[in-house]
Each structure stands twice: as C-alpha cells, then as structure tokens.
Image (cartoon, rainbow, N blue to C red; front, side, top):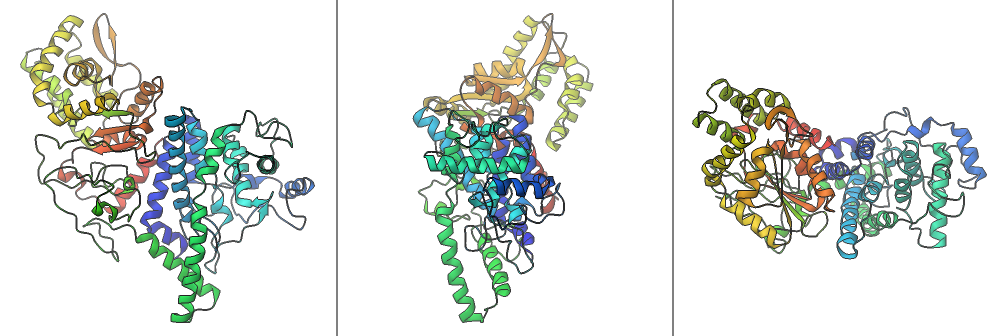
Length: 610
C-alpha cells in the first residue's frame, strides 16, 4: 500500500482534512476564502515558474541560502499541480513530528483549532477583536508547501528538507507562494510568524529574513508589496497580534516531536529483535504501516459501515433522538476517538454521515410528536467557550410541520385560494426540497401568485389567524424551553427559515419571542407582495450570508453560535456555525441505496462549498 493509499484510507487523516476545509470555509473575506480553499485543494508550486538561477543568485547575494546550494526548489514536473494531495503529505521528515502519510493534516487541524480558540479567548477575556481571517487563515497555510518539500520516495521515506534563510525551506516556500498568489500583506506577515514571533530584536530579524527570501522567490519587492516596512529592519507596522496567534497555535510539535522519536526508536528495537529487520527500506515500510494502523485506531466505524479489518462497536439503542455524553462521562472518555475532541465524531444524522460538530445521535424507530430536551448547552468545540447566540431553523425544528405548506393549506380552507394547481406546485416543491434540488426563485414565481392579490391589511389579518390556528398548536414544547434557556444564559436568539419573511417574522416574534427573525424577503409593490426576490433568499448558502450580516453589526460571528436544524439543506450553515445539533432524523429511506463512496463524495463536495 502506497503512502497516498494509506492516507486515503485513514479516517483520522480524512477527518482532519475536512476540519481544515471547514475552518477555511469560515473565513469571512470571500476572495481570501476562495484563495485558501483553492490552495488546500491543490497546493501547486506556482513559484517554481521563476528563473531558478536568478533566484538562487539573489538569495546567495543576500546571504539567505548556503553558498554550496545548486538549486532552490524541490523537484517538480508541473507548476500547476501539487506533487501529491495535501492530505497525503507527512507533517515533517522522519525523526520529527507527524512523520507519516497524512501527518500534515492532523498537525494543521490541531493547530487551526488552537488558533480559533486563541482568537475567541482574546475576544472573550481581553476584549480584543482580532482578524479571524489572518490568524486562522495564516495557520491553515503556514505549511502549505510540505506536500512539495516532503515528497515520498521509492524507499518509503520522504525527501530530506534543506535549509533556507535559517529555517526549513518549506516555511519560506510557503510564504513565497502566498505572496505570489497575491494574498494580503498582513496575512503573509501573520503566516511568516509561525516559526518565530517578532517579540524580540532577534525574532524580528528572523521573520524579516524569511519575508525577504520569500519576496525574492516570488519576484516581489518586499517594501512595495508591504510584507515589511523597511528592507532590513522590521515587519510591517503596527505589529499585529495575529502573528503571535499563528506562532502560539503552531506548537503541537513541542509534544509530537519527542513522542515520534520515542515511538520510532521503540519500533526500530522491536523490528530488529522480533523480525530481524535492519535495512532502512524495509523498516520504513514497516514504520509507515504501523503508523497507518495507529491512525485508524482511535476511530471505530458505526455498525453497518462495511469497513473491514476494524473492530465494530455496538451502538446502544435509545428511544430518544439525541444522546449527549458529557465530558466527565466514562463512556465519553472511552468513545471511538479515545479522548479526541467529541466534535469530530461521526454522527448518523440528517446530513448523511457528515463529519460535523454535533451531539451524538441514534436512529429512532419512529418520530415522536415532541422533541427531546435541547436545553443542555455545551461549549463551542473549537473555542471551549459557551455559544453567544442560538440559531434555530423553523420547519420541523421548532414546529411539527412546514409553515409554507401550512400557509397554502390554510388559504385553501379559507377559500382565498381555490385553484388546485397550487397544491400540485407545493407537492413538487416538497419533493425537490427533500431531494436537495429546489430552485427557490423558480418555485416562488409559481407559488406566490396564489396570494399576491392580497393587500397588506388582508394579508396581516390572515397571517395572525394562521399563526393562532395552525402554528401555535404544533410548536414543540422543547423549542420554547430551549429558547428560554438561551435567553436566560444571555444568548442572542434567532430564527432563520427559507419560508417567506412576511409570516416567518410574526411567528418568530409572537410564538417564540426570539430576538431576530430572518426569512426569504419578497418585493412589495403598492402593499401587495410579488414573486420577485428582495436580496438573498434564506436558503442553503443564503442562510450563511444572511446570518453573517445579522450577526456582524452585533459584533458576533457564526463560529460563536449553536445551530439547531433538521434538514440537510442547512448543511452550509451547519458547517459555518460553531456547533450544530441535528434535532430530527429524516425519513429512513432518505439514505437507502446510497453507496459509501457516493456519501463520501457528497460529504467532500459539501465541505468544498465556500
């Protein structure tokens, strides 16, 4: 089995890769988010297109590379494609940290979680609003060229790293790639601080040296490009805390380097004594295999996963929908991740086995009328702090039904709508919604004419009666309790629904009493609604856009929220939120007949959406 195959088959590696992508998806700047996701997907060495002899001469002239070096770049065949995927690269060479296939992802995933936690801690404790994009994004890309530097060799070892500007070449090459791709100067400086903080004169000199070397490789003037202010003296001013955050978060190696050295030493002794393995190539193969098995060990697939060679773990039955294990529960501590953060556990929920931050779930035999209690809030997994806002979907989450379907049926009962074609339209909408193929704009053009003739007074009167007659009786008691608990905890409460805002807002205010309500807004002309959308609809990715806008002027962000939903259509917001609770399992046939490969593909495609 090749190193790439080992990494591909490792659950921990692939989960770590998804954690990194999910963190990149939470970056606020759309252009930066797209650039970071693109680099993660394909960390191509575009800087290698430069004239290598000219770059080498310039670096030697500045004293930034050894005089005996004859090349600057590792071997490459194509500057538009990475030599290997991000998820198959080791975290470093043998004898250092994460020296196994996929070690880069497990290393970066832990660092990214640490960076997010530090950003939140500075905000919650010191009141410092750091730039999330630069701190977390800089951490995500701080080792972006390790897939290029640490290429796997035929002897099962990886390429030996050279020094550049006084540090490992991967660091300078990664900074150069960010400069070459036009990432913001502040972002590049934060990224450059991963190996040293500029808190002393010597530290600043090192950071500046790396920036100078990277700028030479990228073919950019470091002063005009603003990575640092004066050519030799210091980085760009004012000094920004984001660089210190990147440096602090990049300290998993402090533990993992000695741990790796001790394990490899013990494994070598065992290989010699028990199997007589002494040649380096055979030992490397044994080492990779051992590390690959170790990467599998923490995860145990749920019953029915079909993965051979792993011990299956019996899932306890439960009559409820959600089983939450607290950190002090012994069963929690010995769960499949063996003390790994519980937010990376695999949950059978309405998102088709997506790796997400959610409570532990079981599949009910039937769906009860009421939801289980949802009032036990937990810290946001990525930060360790309690959420600052609770966000709720409406349909089938807070109410036992669909408000849009209920509204149309109510109008039929009142004789406002008589044409049966609108019932057919709703049935088609329901089918396409559950299939994940709904075009909300096209559906509105078909459905809204049924009641677009109502003036404002008529519409408001019907909405008030509709709420009392159809919505209040089907509101989940546990929904009220959870909202009350959130308010008591000082959290902002929001309802966000793809249904039309003209009845979502009254429902949210009169029935549930939340602070903010967001629905799909329609253009109103002369007091009458039209099928024309006003702004971004609160559907799929639109929910993320609208929620970000609602939170931003309140000084909050989605990563500080907990999101309650029942639908796979809410996957984008589930990934953007700090924590997510799936409150209802979809119909059992929803995942029937779906291959494991297809579900994995859908999971990856979902995580790649910005």
